[in-house]
Image (cartoon, rainbow, N blue to C red; front, side):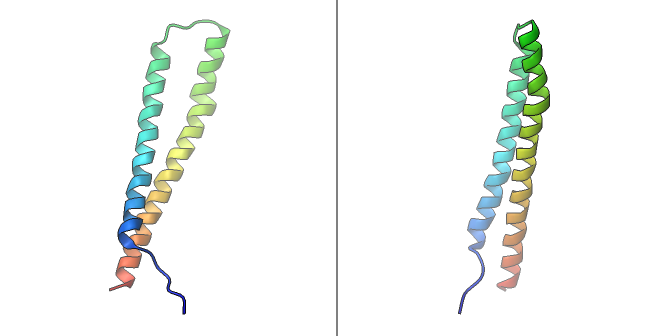
Length: 87
């Protein structure tokens, strides 16, 4: 007979760490954006890089942030459901 379930505390810890990872990426994205904005750099290469950063790279980071938040919420929800099922 197979046992299904999870260690609820480990699952909650995972959810918390995933959320923290999302926050860390958001903070680093903001830090890098501020640094880029304050860097004296002019010309076509600078314009191209800033455009890529504010478009492609920022969007990719936003997608990672959202995926980590979603995964963290799911892990926490599953921990709560497991906890309720075990009572």
